[in-house]
Every structure is written in C-alpha cells, then in structure tokens.
Image 1 (cartoon, rainbow, N blue to C red):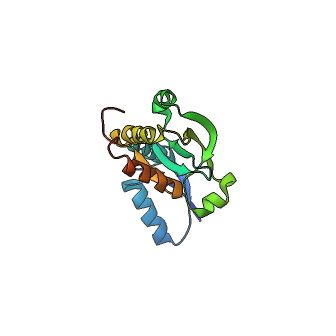
Image 2: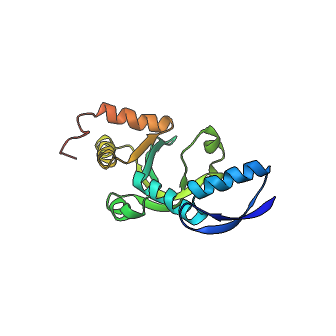
Image 3: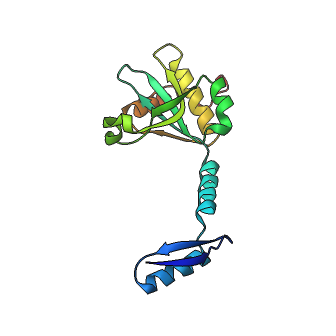
Length: 167
C-alpha cells in the first residue's frame, strides 16, 4: 500500500491509498488522470444521469386484489403532480425486486409515493390514465410481480382507454 497524490480528469486532486503491485498502481493513476473523477464529481455525474432518466414507477398487486403504483426514485421535481393525482408520500414503500426482496420486505423499504387503487367500476380507466401519464412523459414503469402482470393485463383489457382523450 502507498499514498499517491492524484490529479483527476475533472481537475480536482486528492491523496489516495492504492494497493497491489506497482504496475497496477501506475495503471490506476494513469486512468484517474485520464478518465477518473473525484468522489464528489463522480457522485454529481451519477445524480445527473439518474435525473435524466426521470422518476421510476412500478406496479404491484396485493393479496386483496389492490393495485399499487409506486414512484420511488427521482420524484422530487414532480411531487406536486403526484399529490394532485392522489399519490401519498410514505417514508417507506416496498422496493421493487425479487422474491428475496418480498421475503425480507422489512429490509427493502425506500421512501416514495404510492397510489392505491382498490376494486371498483373506474379502476381500469384510472390505471389506463396513470399508464398514459407515466408513458406520456417517457418515464420508467415496470411490472415486476404477479400484481405488475395484473396491471399490464388490465391495460390490455381496456386498450380503448389507453391513449384516449377521455382520460
């Protein structure tokens, strides 16, 4: 291990610890100086990339047949729109993911917005309206569970509403 003064490609400099053989350390230093960013610039770059994608939504179903549409990423800029559409903010909403995520749900919770749609005569139209709104902004919507598949099926069943002006 040795300490090296690095001049990153972003223009910042720092003293870092590098491990491994000398040739690997020299290779890392060369990379930092040509393509690497300091931790602050790297974090800012990643935030900018995430923000460019926009908010992330996913749909899930519950055992009671309720459809939940959850927005859990990059939602600050659209929080007023979410409120107007009936979404509620929670300190913890279930994070999307695999069966392991579902089994250990308490460990996989993130802050986010959630819209709950119970069974009712206008549920299909409301789901289609939300899909139109999300897809119209080219935001990401994933259906990762059986509930998500239910959401997709509901949209397919009422394709007459998707893209219509009546929503």
